[in-house]
Length: 358
Image (cartoon, rainbow, N blue to C red; front, top):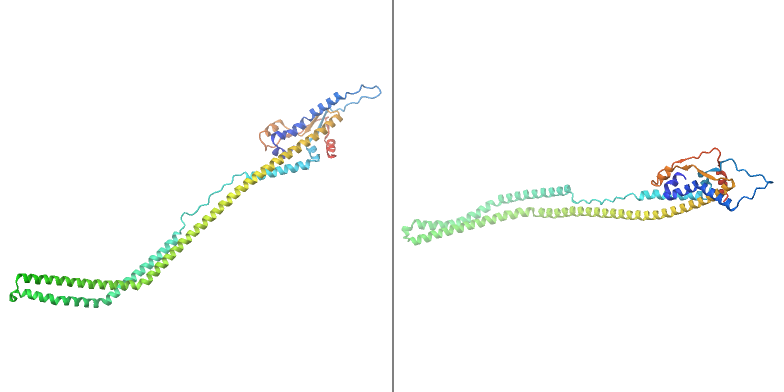
């Protein structure tokens, strides 16, 4: 057998043909003995000379590699071996573990730099609006301060005259012959007028401050509203874009996982198909090898009888160590050694011609 046969033939089958060839002498010898037993030689006649066996010690050799090549089914056998090698190579690739890593999804979809940039822009615009609002308030205060003071003085003057008159009466109590109870009433009246004057002046001040605030706010109201709307729209757009990017990434990752799973299932189907194909190929090769072995054994038996050979050896032959190792290690390259004989006849050519005529 050649190197490829040793790699693809199971141990029990690998040695079958070799052992058959190695023991072909035993089959030939046994066949020849049975034939002699069933067909004994007739008594020698004095008129016929005795047939002498050739001087070969009853031993012959055959080159098993040449014999196998000359068999009509050798090309078919080689094709099956090539097919077996191809299937095994494909299986080696498919049997390698396929690793599928789950794609990573960014847990932080928002771009901090874009977010911060937009936030700084909004904060800067708000600060500018606040400054302009303060300037508008200050300007309105300056423009209306004189009018406010005038209104305040009018209120003060209106209460001041009445208060002064009451105080004059108290100062002239003796001349006016005012009793203590009347003086106390005048003092209470003065206190009440002073309180009313303070309230009127406070109301006037609050009204003026409200006018200033309202004016300042009105001066920047449109800008503030526009900034708020634009900011919300911008931030929402940033958020929507980030969420869309994250959704797209998750969709791509899900698609990648699906493709990986589909590839894994396809690899499994291909493995099952190749394993079934390998079993069929192995069976076909083994059947063909058995048929070739039977054909060669039959031809060898006939040649053994024809040439009066008791032992036929196949060369080159595998060493015992090689046979034992191959039973354990499938891919170990077989070791062979030739058989060298001085007077053994070589039946290779004759056997090859017999096989090729079929």
